[in-house]
Image (cartoon, rainbow, N blue to C red; front, side):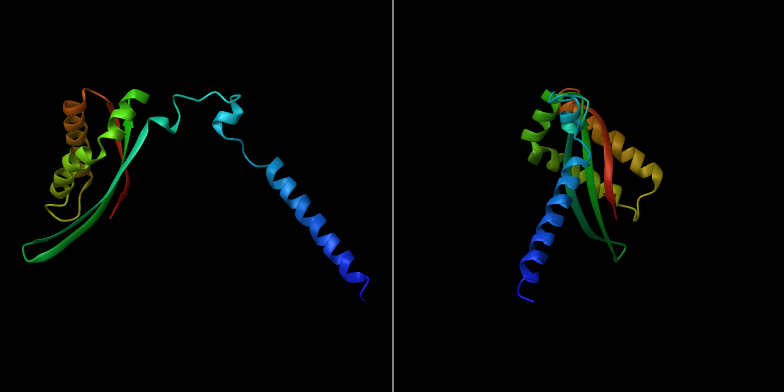
Length: 140
């Protein structure tokens, strides 16, 4: 019985190494690895996540609460840098718009579109036409 224990341990180690090799070999490549290490300017480097904004207030004596998380698409890497460095200013600009979005209860599709257009306009006025689009990551 004592002679089987090292063999089982050896088999387990060999199986673990085969699984590790398979995981490394067959794992999907990242965009930078697929392009030979070159960074792709059209990939996720242009996106800035902001929020989540937690909205809680009373409307006609009824509680209104919501959660809004956004992703801002910058026009280029320099625009993304400007947006990232001014995240507190962006929060101060977008939070009142988020509260306005929930001002009549649960937001409708039209109110969401209006919010996005206002947010893009406000950010482009402040930062000089750097925002391409705004995407809503979560809306509750």
